[in-house]
Length: 159
Image (tube, rainbow, N blue to C red; front, side, top):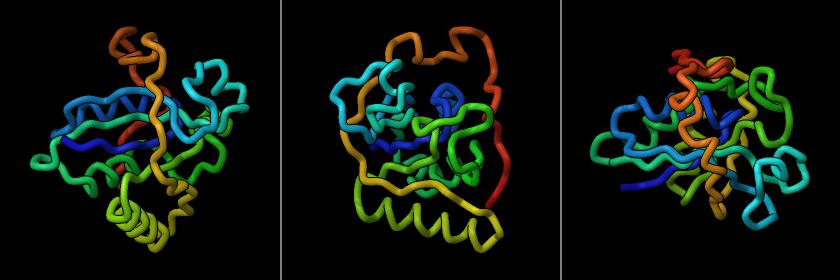
């Protein structure tokens, strides 16, 4: 099993859609990229910790490749929105891929370049993965627990 890290707005919607992807074993909502250890949701939302809302995707590389997951990521959020996602505005909602190694970084950059060649103004940041902090339990499987659907995440074919 391998892990991939994506930030695409509110983690509830990103988690919900990644859980439906073939080859994905588990998706956990959390925080990455900041400077404070074990930040709370309130601290992340205050924009003082530098974290983004991130999903940790555990997947089986025999069933789905990192490239396929990353393409899917670009198709379930708007990678052209500069400071958030839909109505969710702020640093913690900015689009990013947190890569684990140089291979992942190159794959993500290749996909960004493909999207830009198609006319998309992609603003997704490529950042090295850092410590992942699991979000509070009430954020895990939020839409499933509340029998709701994402309000600003949906699938849109881009590749």
